[in-house]
Image (cartoon, rainbow, N blue to C red):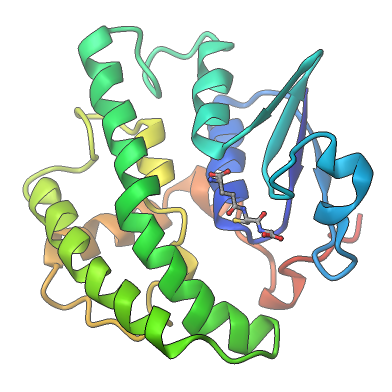
Length: 216
Ligand SMILES: N[C@@H](CCC(=O)N[C@@H](CS)C(=O)NCC(=O)O)C(=O)O
């Protein structure tokens, strides 16, 4: 199997953490953001969205990070990250849909406009989008905060792929213009998850490495 990824990309990190957690052998190819590798014809043939991550397994070219996490676990012997039990799976899939559509849509837009654009791309973020995404984030952060009260993981009693999906933008958490103080259970959860060994293993060594091909 081969995974196309970008160093520091939140959606790449969520898949890389699952690969690390499973301890499976996947060939990782990092793309160079500044060289526009995502937009080259050979890459567009793998993912017409021109985004990472993409997993290639034989004739399967799979994009969408959450789909990749599910496929990787189902292809392995692991019984806990994405259990076979239908109700547990539905719960995990629900939270993966929710993070993509709501929580991380807001958090991701806020991170991109307020942090990534000015710091990594030397362009100004869109203030209207910043305001709107911060507004949306406050609504969805409340939902996650409530869910995390008295719980260690989003679903069940052990870590699942829903957790790696949920925290994918943690790198940006303290950098975005957003008051996280009303969400103590969410904050505790992020603090625990960001220290977990498989997540930590996916962190860039240096923020200067983000988007670049790591030196061997
Ligand atoms: N829904 C997609 C989103 C993928 C995505 O947003 N990828 C970003 C990096 S985290 C990307 O490839 N950005 C490069 C670009 O847009 O040129 C997924 O979950 O895989």
